[in-house]
Length: 235
Image (cartoon, rainbow, N blue to C red):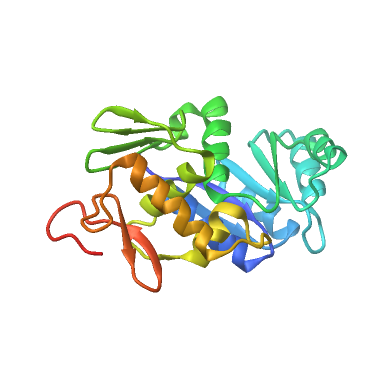
């Protein structure tokens, strides 16, 4: 199946880089826009299957973009995101035409799940496979389930998202700070040792030996990566 285009609209380069990487790995073609006017042009040019839309944009803001799309009978699903997370802000976003609302800071892994869910409702064929496999490990992103050799393993939400982040990185090393950004959001003050504790718990639950890892390998002084599926084990 060809990658389906998702329009990502945000003027923060760090958020664009992070979200784009996750949507790319989830099987989507990501098109970006930094303001509302560019977003409206991109909708006409690229015909995206979904829009991830920030509220606070320079010039034409996200609420105006959503309202314009609905007023012109464009029914493309909209996932709105904003640092304004109060109930009345979420209600306003939904009233203006958003299909879902995600408050910042957020987990990019959760954003991908929400994108998949919205597309499953409107365009079932547009949703890429929602399962990750690594050796005897299977992660079902939709059901939020982890299995090792077919046996269900219970992870907390943070542990689940951290495992997904490491596997989706495709062998690239994720630093502790990058994992904190992914799991807790870039505005959260979390210590690196919190990541180490979570990884130890994940390994214990998966039966993963840190000295000969099958799933999560340590890169000393840096962070973590997915362990090689075959050949020599690296720590």
